[in-house]
Length: 197
Image 1 (tube, rainbow, N blue to C red):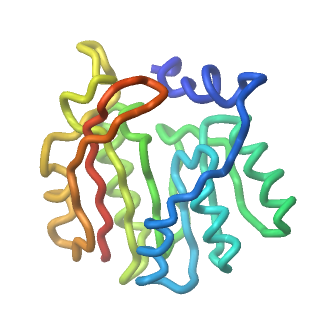
Image 2 (image 1 turned 90 degrees about the vertical axis):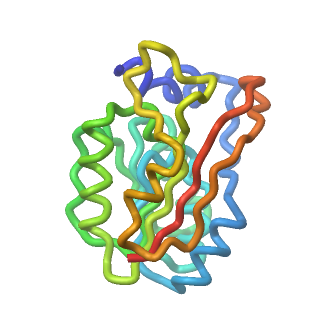
């Protein structure tokens, strides 16, 4: 499992020819800003943290967490270059504990690296540490995704499962879709959720 979790560190971010671009999700930023003009954001499994850096540019207080030392070092350097303050931590989500309450918690493209038991514990913790009217944003891989192998320890969600987990919250956006991955040359099966407490 450690090998899977360290995939981006070992196979992507630490490669000499890899260039950090801090690509941001403009649509997601727009959707967050419709609901929140400021506040505290927690980005779990942040990777290059492009979206969070953009939110920090707009005055949000950001905490980024990733298992990749290379990613976190680069995020810190980029924040310094932009003259923004960001709290960036090297942590494993299997053992990380959320200690504060946040206005927005983002977790995209991470859960398929973690076992089911850990994920459901983490989702409970995320919900508990979201402030009233706060947002949770997830993108998860669905069962049947090409990256899912018979011995995959990481969890792949069933159709509609994530929406059901958030049925007591106001669901602002939920969609299941397929997206072509240029690097892996495969069509991924995904679900996106944005919900308000």
